[in-house]
Image 1: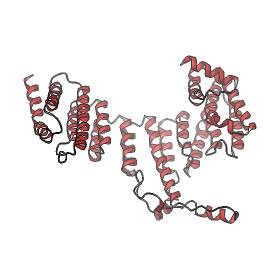
Image 2: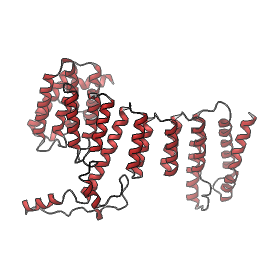
Image 3: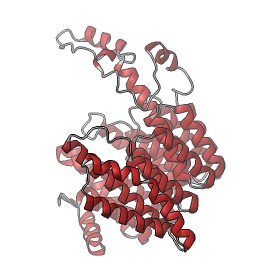
Image 4: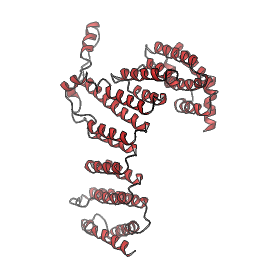
Length: 437
């Protein structure tokens, strides 16, 4: 205990000039400073004694964060200047560094350190913390994703973000989530490039000219140019000029080659698992405004048809491709819905009996996405939508509980709050969901 007391005293002595400065500036009263010193003494004795835990470091860091927040408010209210020599940020860093050195395997402490660096905007410190954490815990796939997203979104450095993802896959190649996050990172980047091209008018120049020739009575709206956009709002994408974007339009990276390469590598790793392929399809389909999305989805579908043609996942992906980028109130929706339902019907007839409830579940989840706008739809389209939902819900109702779970959750989320439900089967499934919950 003598050693622990000596260490605690040593650390406490380091903060004496800081407390004296607070007293001299009138930021804290003598009683408050005495309370601060007593609280720090308690924490230091706990940390330096045997049996200290990661939670002790976390509590000490939280106390110092709150104290520094109070100090900043007092300085602002009292108009105190020149009290910036002592930074609570530095104190918190020191506490968390000691904690992570003593407990390198505690991810809660590492995440607290990372979140604090992010809140404080301490980019250099954050880079060091991420590097140290991943050096000690390379199997934590979530940290690889966090680091890649931080470099891509906050630093605008896609090359470093990609390197983090690729290094992460060396250690966590069996983690489906990491493969999907890598694909998502690339799709977000493509979406930002597409948005930048649209802002610069590179995609719409010919289209606007053609529309003006077709209809002379149409009011021409001014085109949005890069000069109309805040030049400082450039986070999350490298600085690329108009000429670079024009050249990039035909580059493999812009046409979806990277997401396709990620998918192909994932399929080799997961032995062409159709569930993994469907996860990729679901992810990419969410980026319907990206020009290369259709090509990527078609590539995924082609692979599924080659490796797992007789699966519910392949059938539903093929059916969903018809609805890509089509709104429920669009004039193209009825034809797309007809093609989708025709694909599902033919697939249902060809699938083995045990896979039919699985396909019915997936079909219901797809159709439920359009249920919120059914009151605005054409009457005939609404009838087809509701009849199809009820038809496939009958198959789901006879399925095992595991298959029902996603449908029940979707019903509660999409139509539970509004209270407007149509169809006997939907009412029955919804009521059972409410009872079960």
